[in-house]
Image (cartoon, rainbow, N blue to C red):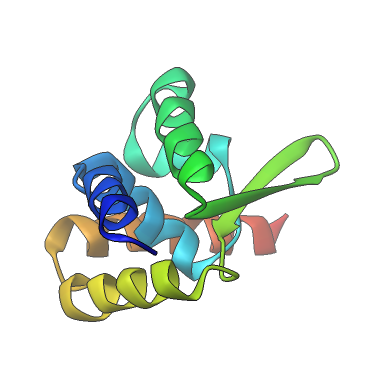
Length: 113
């Protein structure tokens, strides 16, 4: 990674919604529908953020049935190290904790079905 790529990567991360998405998908492969629910945002807005993250190589998507599931792209080691640093050091931010609480609610609901 050169300095220009690092700057671009950090600019992509410098957004509340994208940080929240990264926090969510770092814990579990998640669909756009579930991300929208957790963030209380519409699909168009969430999808725009996911496209930026995917084009930068931060997230990857996989089709599972009729859903596209998003997860961290763990193949880019340098990006993963930065993301892990952020989550480890800032994961206790209340907004991130609230998002993970909603994610856990979804997981529990899906277990009951």
